[in-house]
Length: 388
Image (cartoon, rainbow, N blue to C red; front, side, top):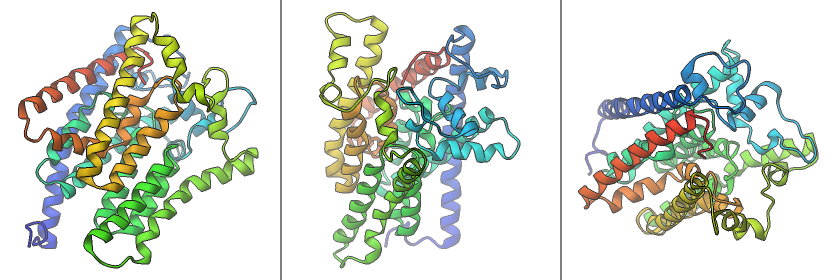
């Protein structure tokens, strides 16, 4: 009997409390430093992009409200609408702005509510990730935690008004519940994750395959509850039903991507990344080249890591990461944002930790590079740069 299985309920509670403290002590300084660097960037290079009039005049809050944050704030305040041929909020899934609106009922300003939601979800997400990683690999879970917490684009977890932190805690929570033989909880969290980001197929396929895979490895017959995670897709179905009833278009979130300004209609131009090649060659502005080239590189590296994920973590996690990275990689015209989207492919960080397990020097080097780049991107985001 393993040590973890021999713990009494009281002993297990102590272990959970200790892991929570371990995670908080390490993640909180990273989060606060990331916010501090973003604030520094905002002070040194005041951004010229639009800042809502009701943003509190607090430096660190202003620094965390950039780009798509405006859309989430708009939805939280005014709901959804469509103007044909123009950018509209239906491109953004509903759970995050709905949660922001719910927090405003406590009397908070919508932007303070949004920052609070993102920050708390980040802390919860990193803790659940640590629990999940330890469940699967007790020897390297701490390294996996550091890789995720210091990941350069993890800046978007730490209070930034984007939905990445919420999706992380829901997705990791769903898989962790599944590993703990709680399929109902896994399905519920998976459904919420599907209402949060447009990678719902990855969540449904990943959870369902992992559920069946675990049963197959145990050598037992399949149970009806093993198929329960397929119902996680109800989160996406609910969103599509709302769009159908309200705007007579269940795929409005996809169709609006092709309007001027976003210019990402589905088709060969996007699938073959012709826009990316046209922008990068034969000559490109260095800042643009660094940004788009960096996102493309991260995409390739993430897809490479999917291969050992199949071998080391199983088919369920392999398919989940493949789809989480692959869906935006295929649909994006220029890889923009893919660095941030990799956060959702959280099993890749455990895979990377396993690959670095016997390479301590290289592992420390990766930590240092991640940390330095995280600080640089935080400053850039605070300065209003289009980071991801």
